[in-house]
Image 1 (cartoon, rainbow, N blue to C red):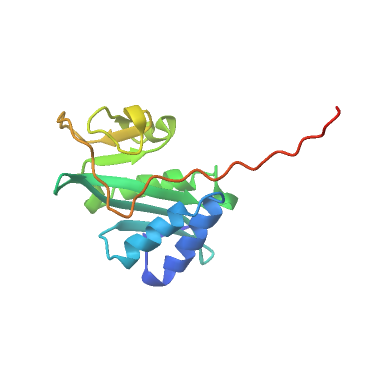
Image 2 (image 1 turned 135 degrees about the vertical axis):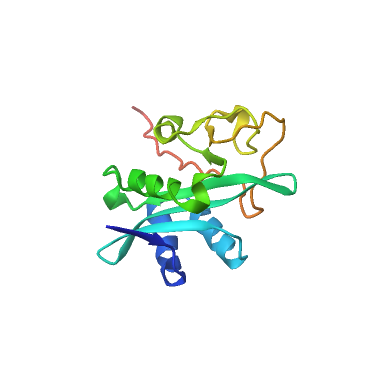
Amino acid sequence: MKIQRLSEENRPKVYALLQRAFPYSTCEAELVQKLHENGKPLHEWVCIHTNKVIAYIAFSSAWHGSEICGLHLAPMAVTPDFQKQGVGSELLRFALRQEAIKSQPLFVLGKPDYYRRFGFEPCKMPICPFDKNNTHFLSMRHTSAALYVVGYEPEFKPAEKPPVPKMKTRRGR
């Protein structure tokens, strides 16, 4: 397994990985594709195994008004065949050691129990626009107690919930 910066030639592989990792959502793949198309500055790495992209991580700018106040970790994904094997953890640890990341305040919207293992802590301020009550919003190296809503790149939009399939019921039982 090899970790490297995302190359332009591997972008389509990342979009396909995001579709496999999030089979009920197109949001993640579309988000990353739009960020690339719009030339947004991203810090991105992939895990390569037998010439296949098996994991991906990205960091984009976090905003306090018109000023950058840190980085958002999103998305991070591992192809289903390699999930629950430590690949995502290894990729995240690698990313957290990189020069562009290691001194920045970081924010993540995710599973608190998972991200706490890497040093993220529950975050009450700033307020995450995608998480009512900041229940799943965590930060690392963020010290400001100022009240504000943290900004994301405009390509980030609230995920639409997929329609719930209608259940077929048997009558008469």
